[in-house]
Image 1 (cartoon, rainbow, N blue to C red):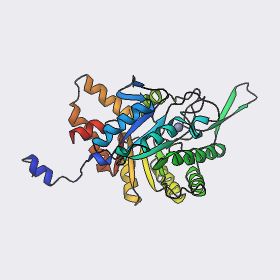
Image 2 (cartoon, rainbow, N blue to C red):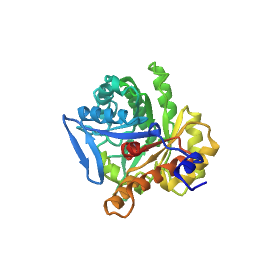
Image 3 (cartoon, rainbow, N blue to C red):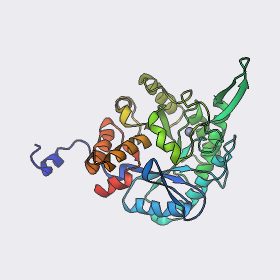
Image 4 (cartoon, rainbow, N blue to C red):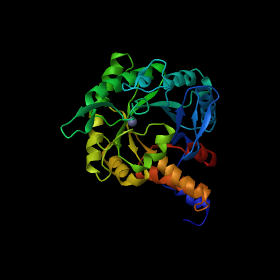
Length: 323
Ligand SMILES: [Zn+2]
């Protein structure tokens, strides 16, 4: 049954198609800006006009959608750029939605505060001096959730087809659902990053989105990589709060968790092949250590086989070209 490609194709259990791939876009201020990200060759920070061009090529390749991130011109403690009416992603969404050639792409807006806070954490930070003289800080769950809900409404109003909370605060899905419904946006689905592990593989993204925390790390709100059962609990909670779909992140180091989630939950599920997964493969391609096309497709089919229906990946355009 493996003798020819025709035979192999006939009995292939898992298939990849461009419509299952989602391409991340990093929107930045300005015009005509197309700035390559050092640790992610082939991936760019794009001004809105350039992002529209990029989206057009994604639409021509038949990709499923875009996942939007923003780099605001200014950052502050309240993450104003995340929820402001004229925020960078809001501007981008309006431009994308005004272009009929892009109707085939689902626009997914990432909802988080880390790209917009001056300290780079995913929520509001409270500092408290203690007796030992050191300043301690905590990321406040509940005040962060209020701003996240406000952000989701703002992005949906600007034209996001789907909002995707990636912050990992407790209760944010329910808060967003309530806020969206209250704003007349009952039809906007929520794609929850339900199981997002605190991962070293996010490294290059922090350069792409300029969102590295200025102090501490994200381990007090993102999940411990050792915990698969806890991931199931996180997913269950997000679904109970009203999440319509779930996203697993990262992908390759967590394929077992994706499989476990697929067997347990009957909702659409995607996985995010994160920046570090892309960059390490890309580095090996550049050195001639791995065969580009085959390694790229193998990494993607593995994620589909584990049980993810759709994949957010920086390889989306390259893979679509091959497919
Ligand atoms: Zn974040």
